[in-house]
Amino acid sequence: MADETSSDVDVELGDDYFITLDYDDGTSEECEVIGIFEHDGGEYIALGPEESDDVYIYGYRETDDGGFDLLELDESVFDDVSAAYLAIQDQLEGELEG
Image 1 (tube, one colour):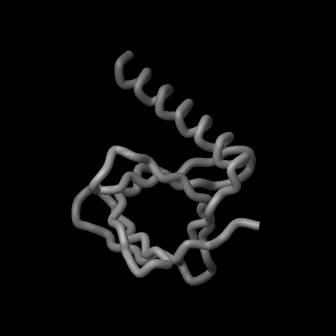
Image 2 (tube, helix red, strand yellow):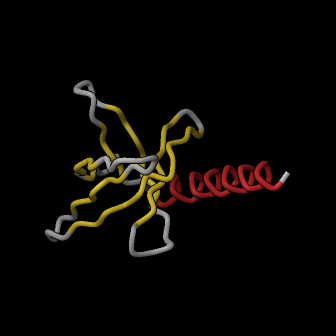
Image 3 (spheres, one colour):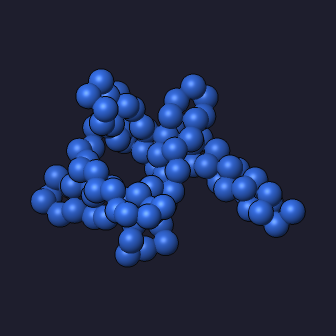
């Protein structure tokens, strides 16, 4: 079963949305929400840390109170979902270029 990651949501003015990831060691990291996407019946979220070009991918689940949970992915699921994310990015880039 996936581990849940706690998150506080900070929405900035404008078109960009940011999430603060709070880690178990007491540190936190601001990440821009790149997008939420579906793959094989699940929902996932791609986050871009402010201080890096990395992309973090988590499972995404809306809660009854209007919030959401981020779910860590097992390695096998992560590899599959990462490939799906890259395919979506390639498709979007192709549409922008075309």
